[in-house]
Image (cartoon, rainbow over all chains, first blue to last red; front, side, top):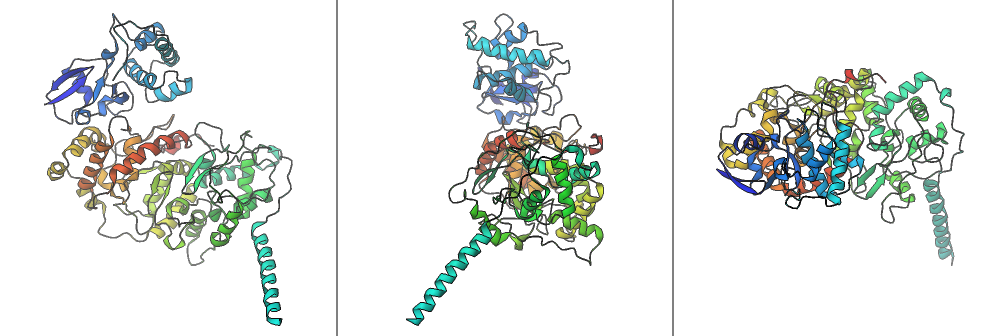
Length: 165
Length: 451
């Protein structure tokens, strides 16, 4: 039994310490934004934020998360009150099948939290570990820049600041 | 006063002689500029040969900056003395070597002097290139002179006084440069001699794999005993090799050609670029290098065979995981899914009992690869590994490394692991941003388009 901090809440998890975080998020906590893609840390669909950094949850065992803060897409905003990164992806219609998008948003969020005005090259380099087979790359890039502007102009709903731990 | 007269005369003679001697060592004339030669004036066959030689010499590794134009220089090379930046060797007339004659190029290769007569720092490995033949220098020159010219002024080196004075290099050469010393050995095969010529010359393997002395010169007495490159440890590739399964000519050929070997794993760090280059040169040259290096490794010790090594990687019986519970859990969750998948390299991870990184005296390479992973080669099937820099802190990486060392090897534990890991975290970030091209080797070089 261990305590896992997800989206600001403590959860008591009954799982082996070598269980990948992704399984716990989806199976135990029913947080289904993070997706299982390759299971090898190569496609990015499972990306969540841990202590401000984007990590592949499919190759991150629980044992590494003692005392750390996990943020999933659900922790950023909801359909009713989307975070800037979610609004930006919707406004740019950046998803086609959407399987990769939750992971893309999480890494983009982590980038924007440490660099509020990334250049196009920086966004491309940051998102390089993510695969999208629909081919909406250009929209995704625009969405990240739009999110940067949204965050910058404080167009935020007051209750959701869209900042992950 | 005859005695003092003689002494005075002697001193004067010594001073004049010394000055003349120093002048002879230091001073090199500028060679005349040429008008850049037309591309068409070079024989295409020779250009092609030059391309292969440039790949054997790994020129692009230092002279191409990640994401920048080929051979335009600008790569920071960290040394114990300061940072030296590689230069533009494209045929741009103003910022490259477009106005260099073939004679000037050959002089640079042979004695480390640029066209204007300045001494070049030995980060440019002319201590090896001095052994390159006139014919090969001519082909290399033809290849470089037919590249796309790029305007890219050299960046100023970051060296302290007096090392920023190039005359100092003349003294270094006097001590350490042995011009054109390579001699074929008539008692050995043609292939062995070809390998020796390449390894000791153009391929400059010793530049990374031979330890250096306090003045930055390779220690001749410790040839191939292991050195370093870009914050990676370059393993000993002689009888002291830490590889659990000894190398032989066949394994060396396969590894150098393909970038991985089932008994050894995958080339990464600076070696990834080397094998990426070697996948594009004539197979006979790679065979020759393997033959020569197999002799340098020496005959394998019989007790170090694959079976004995693999036996160590049997499922953990619990003793090691009890001693290292955190490391064992991290390994089981983050590593074993690939390294014990049963898939063969390069698509499955190597059995870590076979890994030189886990068996080596220096934990640096293992720390580097755990943090940075192995990036896929663009547009090709290639070995991959995710990096764990974002998900593991230094204590966790240390726990993992201690577990791997204890479970998969019979070597003593590493010391100062956390310091190594902290350094690896810092340096890998920089290395990944600057180093050239391929981060790992292609799984099958035959997929590549022919040059």
